[in-house]
Image 1 (cartoon, rainbow, N blue to C red):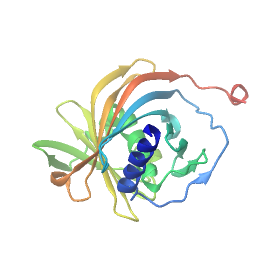
Image 2: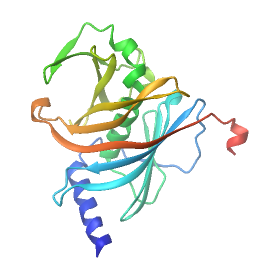
Image 3: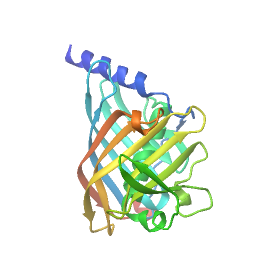
Image 4: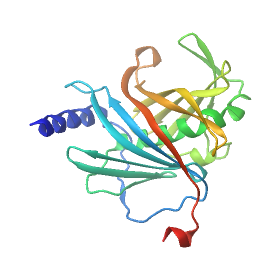
Length: 239
């Protein structure tokens, strides 16, 4: 009965937040080799948008910063779900298919974690600003030809918001070009990762901001419980 209840709650979460980009994920069983250090995060995720109350799960987020890749996996009531965003290509590695919303979620988590500290050097030079909840942020939209172009995807508009008070990109918005679904992250509880030489957020709130920031509704909170850095393998070692 407990598993059945969990399945109903998880299903209601997906129904409420599945309005993301509708790119059909490709089946993929290959192992991608990260050419630089990868960050593996055990992540406690509390989904808020559920008619049955919050749904809590543990996900594994494996991020390859050098190639702008992220793989997310979790054991859910309906079975294991595992999917990957490789640049702009959305791929599934399990029998349970992710939705278009997972595509947005994966890109948002990767960009927020990677560019929270590192991205400030670019955002700080922007003359464009926006006030959010009383704070003035510098903002930059990621493009195909500008800095951090490896994070550009043709199916979504991604904007970075840097806070001059702490020299970090605290907020990232991602808007699906096809459906208009818009998610915004807010990053905090920063931790310096020596092997990467930068700080990463250990808590990320994700909000639905389709109706504007003032009318934002909470979607989830991701809490990085553990952070582990893995050094790159050679192609022969990865086989």
